[in-house]
Image (cartoon, rainbow, N blue to C red):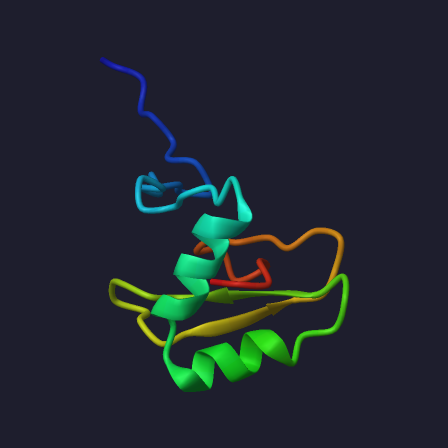
Length: 84
């Protein structure tokens, strides 16, 4: 008789990050900024120093906005994460 395998309490999945891109210089940064809508540009321009924002530009969560105002932000499907 085979041993029964107990499933883990926390199921995980793979997150595809291929769409994320680094912006190495100010030229690329300017191009990305110009590609945003007027509303998105206003939001980004109004950010205080040391604060960022995650704008969802593609995919199921398109239009989502997440303020990044702490040293660390947890992202994932677990409800204990700040962004799920």
